[in-house]
Length: 445
Image 1 (cartoon, rainbow, N blue to C red):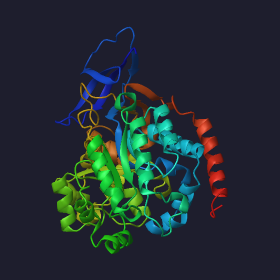
Image 2 (tube, rainbow, N blue to C red; image 1 turned 45 degrees about the vertical axis):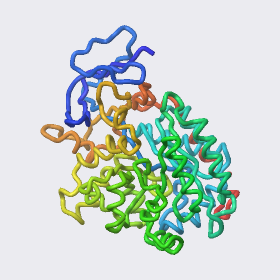
Image 3 (cartoon, one colour; image 1 turned 180 degrees about the horizontal axis):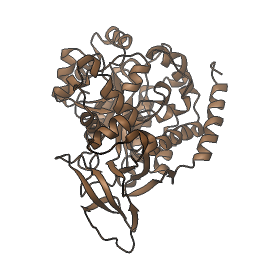
Image 4 (cartoon, helix red, strand yellow; image 1 turned 60 degrees about the horizontal axis):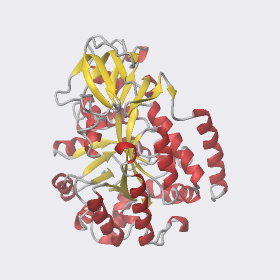
């Protein structure tokens, strides 16, 4: 590889001093190797003139469902349990390998286009290898895993009801195939859906496998009050108390949502080092509630951001999540409760900490992976720029349309709006064909 030299940019570093610099970034292979001013291009380097542009660390989204991108617009205006029972579970049960591949590619194209470079992704029960194939081909950085659902009965389609041993074995097989792929760009995460859909033997084995392989566990918790009532009826405990009771609450656990918490649960999150993925767009659309993120951050709980899935958002846009994360807290806790820098931190280095990669991604520093987004903020909606905090411009004014170039693992995956690894025309065409096929297999069609 010849390397890349980005010249004359505004750099939002998010390093320990949270410096904002003007200068150049030299990339060699997959790493940032030099940051300075007046760097001279080497003969083999690709030079990006970033005069008038802003370079940020690529966004890290810690809760995504690529398998659901095909279902965008198919599950609007429902609360969580109805959303699952009436729409999402039947559609997930209808997936085939090809539909899952294009669902993943559709989501990845949107993510790369809007500056997200790392995701924590939860797939569905079957065909997960096809999602990994899409992740591998696209170049995005991901922690992903097949969803695990071995609890029998209820309203879950038969096609999504697994045997415990088979669910565990398939998860381990996928881990052994994909974990560490491409120098660690792809990592595996065990992904039990939530307590309602998983037996205790499965969850305790996930606990042990996570420790044995040193990988993350990614699940949902305390998203909806009805969900919590079901968990209490099943276990006699609240969600996070139960997860702690069986030994899953530790620094390898990433919990999506965590809206409805009591004091004991907050203490467990803090003391065990559990990571919370805040999904404000999804939480509002499903009328689930508003998480107390200012309180969690004040208590030194690790909080990051995610868009969740396309059918409960309906986009995968970190700009939207940052803006919402800031705004929804202000009527409750005052105008300074969640400032622009706090949410930008959650979207970058906070996400990196959640995935255990804060020494590799999440900030612009020498020795870190070259995961970057280049923004063009020269536009009506982001001006005037004079004497305006650059992070405020990004969080409150910028949009995903302002992302010009996305670099992941030292590779330019989007160059001035043109995707290099995702064939847009093919993906859009096949996405429509795939959802038509899936709908024909369900009562929804």
